[in-house]
Image 1 (cartoon, rainbow, N blue to C red):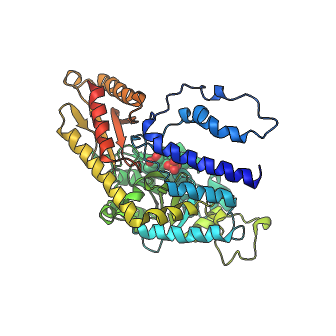
Image 2: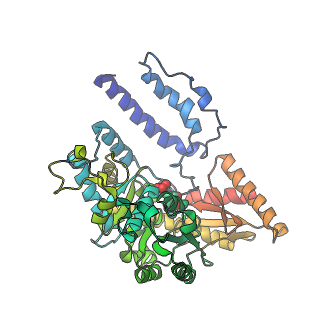
Image 3: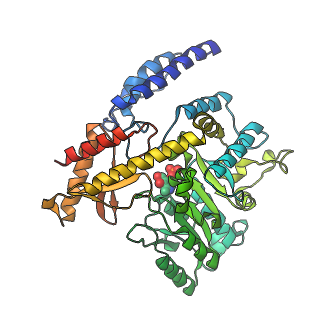
Length: 471
Ligand code: PLP
C-alpha cells in the first residue's frame, strides 16, 4: 500500500467508524452469534497474493460487526462501562501512525514526557496530593501484580536478588476482601505468595471488608509465625461497588507495616467529583493505587493509571538494566520500561490528552454526575416497586437488583433460575445487556450504568424491559 491508497482507505475507515457509532443504538447490544460462526466466515489459509485490503472495509460489516458486543451502546449495562470516546480513537490513530515504541525516554522523548504531564493532570483531577507519581499500565491486573511484587520485595528485603521467596524462613501473607476482584488473587498467586497465604476477609452487610475480621486474621498469622505483607483495599468492588473502610485499613497497615494497595479500577473515575472523594478517605496513607480511565472515564481501552508514593522502590523492583538498554540520559529522565512488567510500550498518553482537550474536566464531571443521578433514579424505582429487591447500596453507578415474585419467596434455587432467565431474556432480546452475578450465594442482576451515550431514557427503557421480562 502506498501513501495515496492509505489516505483513501483511511478516510473511508474514519467514515465507517463514525457511521458505526451513529447506528450502534440500533444494533443488538450483545452479539447474537453462535460459537464458531465468525471463524467459519474466514478462509482457513492466509491470503497469499495480498492487495485485498480495500475489500476488508466492505467485509467488516458482515464478517465482524455481527460478532461484536457493543460496549459503547447506550444500553450496555453489563460488567462495567468501558468507554472509547471519539477523541481517544483519534489519539490511537496518531499513536499507530507515529509507530512509537516508548520503552525508554530516548526511544521517543515525547512519549515519556507527555505521559508525565497527563498523569500529573490526572492526579490533580482525582484530588491526590503531589506525593504520588503515576505511570500508564495496560490493565489493573498487571498494576496490582506490580504492587504485590513491590510489597513482597519490601517485606523480604529484596529477596529477588538472592533466593527469592524460596529463601524466606516465614511465609508472607496478602489480605483482601472476599468481594475483591479476581485480579488480586491472580496477582498473589503469580507473585509467588501461594494460595495458602492469601486471606480473603469476610465482608459486612454492605459487602465491604470487615476490619475486625482483618485484624483477627493478621493477629492469627503473626501468632503462627507468618509475616503479614500486603493489604489490598477495594474502592468500588466489581460486584456491587462496595467501598472498603480505607482509613481504618490504613491505620492497621501502618501498625503492622503492611503495604497498602488500593484497587479503585472503576471508582477512581468518580473521584473527579470532589463530593465523591470521602469514599476513599485515607487514600493518602496507601503505598500504591490503581484505577482505569479505560473504564468509566472515556479513555479507550487500554489505559490503566498506576500511582505510587515511592517510584524509586518500583523501579528497583522492576528494572534489570542490561547494557543494550542503557542510554546517556538514564540518570536524568524516566525510562518507563522500568515502571512495569513489559519492556515495550505504546504511546497511550495521547489518549488521555486528546480526551481532556475534547471534554475538559468540567465536561467529564458533568457526565459522571449524570451517571450517578441515573443510578439513583433506578435505585428509587427498584425500591418503590413491589416484588423487586435491591441487593446492595448504590454509592456509585451500579444497581444490583433481583425480581422476587411472591410465589418464589424463600426459594433461593427457584429465584436463581427465575433471575437468570430474566437476564437471559433481556440480553437475548438485544435491547440491553446486563450481567447476572452471585452475591454471597444469592443470584442478582447487575445494572452497571455509565456508557458515554447512556441517557436517562435508556435507563428508563431498561427498567421497562426488566419488568416486561419478569411477567
Ligand atoms: N479491579 C476491579 C475492581 C475491577 O472491577 C476490574 C475489572 O472489572 C479489575 C480490577 C481488572 O481490571 P483490568 O481488566 O484492567 O485488569
